Length: 317
Figure 1 (cartoon, rainbow, N blue to C red):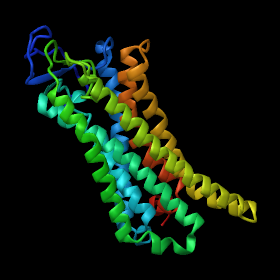
Figure 2 (cartoon, rainbow, N blue to C red; figure 1 turned 45 degrees about the vertical axis):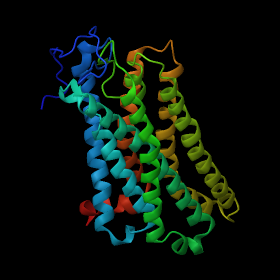
Figure 3 (cartoon, rainbow, N blue to C red; figure 1 turned 180 degrees about the horizontal axis):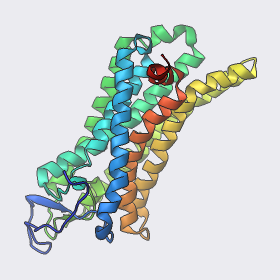
């Protein structure tokens, strides 16, 4: 398949034709930078390939190494799977598929936002695991049993699926009567909703509700966990013990920062950044869906001794 080779393609629907339910949408790409799509696609595709290889490597190592069959690594595997699905779900445009069916567009929207919420929920679960491991080490194996880990994973999936479902239902009911051209590389929620010729404040407000009430609560829970963790770390008697214990949390903190900071920035600027160029919105949205899945396995591979040792074992055995 041609890498990002984007040529003008015939549109099945004019951008001025009146229609209520378009059969297809046209993905415009990065507005104003259409001529550079080929070159822009190269770093995006590179990030995707690195993310795919890295996350599959994490899954392979955890599966093959019995000593890694612990809650922390189970949650890491969940994160790897969600990252694989998340990054793969935006590839349609970059493989020269600019026309997307209406139902496929809504499905893509659902998958993207659903797995973004799953990522957030898994990061909360990982913070809880670190809290129990550091603050209650003797009870860690009895609190976070395999059954509890499975229930947490199921709760994360159900929460995400239910909360994102209104995105899909609301977007389906709006009339799209002026254009079917989406100024984006994928069916991002607000990019699609803004095409509707109706009052879509319900969709916008619900999206803000999810950001502030769900994501914000996740950040609060993570902050509470790490407040207790830091208190426990600073109460340790020696500097070496403090550094060693904090090192077990370092990779998770890096992943949290890589996920939440660009995500909140991208979501809020799309709604409130009136003076921010549209092409910047689109580039940021693509980077946000590709950079964390690429960085997560690198961060854990470099900072987690067990994974690093298993990766280097073939070279030093």
